[in-house]
Length: 249
Picture 1: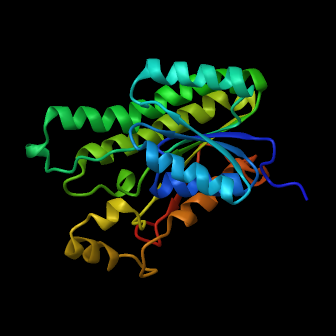
Picture 2: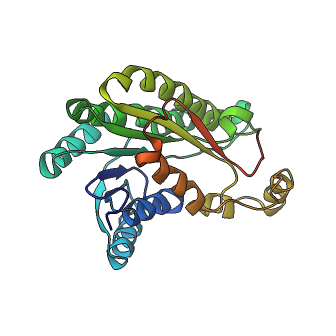
């Protein structure tokens, strides 16, 4: 039986752990050959590749910093030359530097915007070239619930993730004529290293606001990505899918 994404090439940025790792594993389980991007977490990225291989899937790791346009262009160009195409791009790489506005340092603000927003632009621009030639492609950008709700101490992160939504809507309109879709997934409180590192009291306070009464799982975000990458997502573009247990409606 042919798998949903058999024959597709998927590039997932920031895929060495957490939501990105879950996305890579789910896309591979659906039949895609997955390129697991990382910047510094080589061991973790190779563990994701090994897990995919152990499950019968196909994957490889590829290091580059999404915030560095030259690195992105070089990596994507080499990848397309070797594999022939990129069918699915998942812009997942992200960083945070939480602080109140008056305590936010310029360097932290710039790094958060460079990775979370400029990185999405860099990767989309690089991959769009081959997708436009092929007249098909799926771009799926990972934003956050704070992009629409805001959050104290996360001005830089919220600004970057809100920018991802606006960028995606513009991308969807710009590339639709070439058969390329672009959508956003905005997760809420998901069980990852980031939530594990939260102050327990702060995490419990937010969790109490989630109508479904629990943390989301990375696999639940990954399932939505795989849906958008497959046949079911063919007529969906420019949309924001919220996966937050009702935290923001």
